[in-house]
Length: 439
Image (cartoon, rainbow, N blue to C red; front, side, top):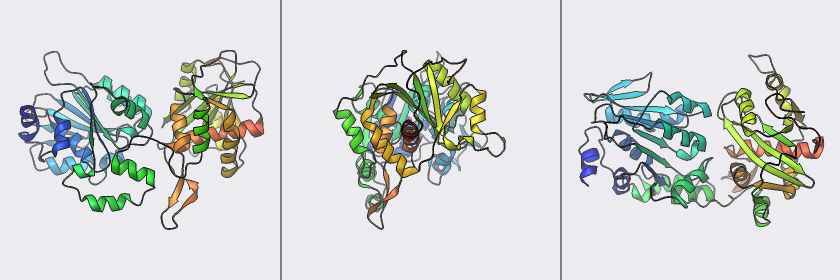
């Protein structure tokens, strides 16, 4: 209690008194901790308090991250809340660096974002004693892990090094967060669960009415903080994924050098957070060995060409959607030409329409075997890919929810359609990157 009193309750820069669950989180001595689970328990405020706990110490530095700048700057979000706390104090705001400086200590709290995969390198020359990630499941696992490398302190400092995260269930890093903090979790990475009822400043009943508009699975995740992830209502491929699991087709599927490796892509968009996503497939007779799924947001072909080389597979063919041949505004070049310049020579998948593509996924699924580790994110996407819910009509629409799952499923759809209509080569000479990455 003395520690909490000194760093929070008597801290002039923390203007709110934490509620009991927040106080438990702020009192943790561990280097790594996670808070929340449900929506509405005061996760963002808990992280702002955590970032400000040591601003009364000279040269202390904290970093608060959201996935995008828009997430960070929304009304009521972290930067807006910090302005409410500190705009009338002696703290100084630098709009260019998005940093508050606290006199006379020269301590800082900086706000940042990791919209694209390589944004994590923006902080290479920085050092922080506290890093806080709000809605942590929205970040990729590689971004989450990399940010630990930005935590450091001088030899003569006794300020603790702390990584603090908070989030609801769901999204791309759901499984990573669940395993790290919740199930099985770890004693040195405590999880402080909190729900709507743990936040006395929130109108719980009004918020529950808002959540009631969501589909049942999403509502329960947000209202109750449920981390068990069964297939949602309206899932396109629930039966297919469950059957693959029950039949033992989700197992260890190592890369086999004697077999060709084919890749099937969804290209995402040139701008925005859509992922450039790839499934890596090795045909072995009837069995189609899915050895890896991989996606990255906001990156282009140079990044992906390097990843292909890093994986070290022997590539036979690369397949992309038909619109890869459309010229882009600004460059005057097609993405097909851009990829070819880097040694990735794509073949084009025919456009057979969305519904036919969905049916083709269902048709080919019984032949697919999945590596349980390297295809984990792709399988989660297939399981969670679901139809939109029409609240007014109380029925599912024929269109999918636009979220992180779409990129992985669209790439899998390219694989399914190409295998049916274009008959990719199942054997023959293969080549190793970087000298040539396709037949």
